[in-house]
Length: 360
Image (cartoon, rainbow, N blue to C red; front, side):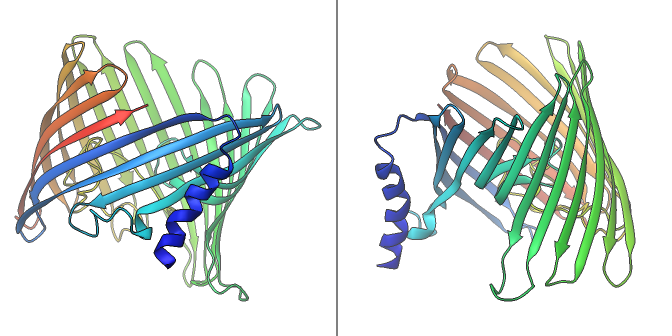
């Protein structure tokens, strides 16, 4: 009965708003991969999920968004029964209101947010966000995230406050100032992370540095940064990804930093393997560094090949390559890829997979 109620709640939300006009968007993704684990045991799995979003304007000053994820289900692991309550989640449900008096927008509810490099946060959160532009160039955000609510009647929650300012222009620059307070762990952190973006044909560059002051029994300072560079020569595209973090690294909330690897990172076409990644730049006990180079070559308008190679300190070396194909323009895409990695402990790992995605 409880499972049935969990299914009916999001469906009732959708049906109850059926009288309102919505713009619908989303994606359906199916993936399959074979690989061996950290002990070199062979295996593999198939999974699928559907994300669908509904956007509506109730009033010229008031917008509403509802998004639902159905699935993210591994076949054979309670799958087949997509009717199980655990397989349906409301990922976004928030109001966005324009305050005329201040020319600012406030969003309240469950929403999505990420920092530019996805080093700290790239996920859904509950809370509020206030956005305001000053002139034509300066854009600001103030965000309160309720990260964790423990005992409701006790001071043992986790909250994060974010102040973000960005100066738009030919070379956008900005900075994040974040304060996190985890009362249950008696831990606080103060993070300062400036960044810049440069587009100078054929070169594009994203860079961010961070200083993370961590306050517990002993106060510690983590330092580091990331650079993503790309050169687009039309006939081919070269890229580089560098991430460095000193001891203690960076306090994160729910990151999704993609370095283009599958075994030693998060790759674009299969983000569920991550055999060794585990955000190694957070709370690391020594210097951490990751260096990845990649190449992409379009063969025609609907077919291209790609490859990458990278090394991570104390983890290992990986090479990967694959093919990406557009089956229906602006709608259906497929990728096939393979990766091989050698861990510093001499464990060898492989991964071969395919991903099929519909975007609408």
